[in-house]
Image (cartoon, rainbow, N blue to C red):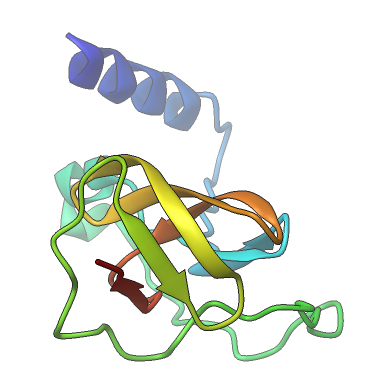
Length: 131
């Protein structure tokens, strides 16, 4: 299955280390003007706790923070996420009016007249369904 193949690739990558293996996780990154939030690999929980040393998270950045010209991210998830389906018209505070192209759980691909197609996490991006 796909999951077993991902697990195998993770294992192969980890066993390539000669003495030590450092694993890092960028919790958020800016990709094409959109903030992308990342979770650690699901396979990390399968590693024996006695083999893992956590060093905490770094608050420093090597490079200065990049400012996105348009920020579609809020710190807290929205409680009132609209129920959407393909074809629905929506309004976004920064991008304006758009049409839902694809919806998959809390991720939507929306085509906006002003900026083109955007993939948005509806947990952190407020859109209003238009009638």
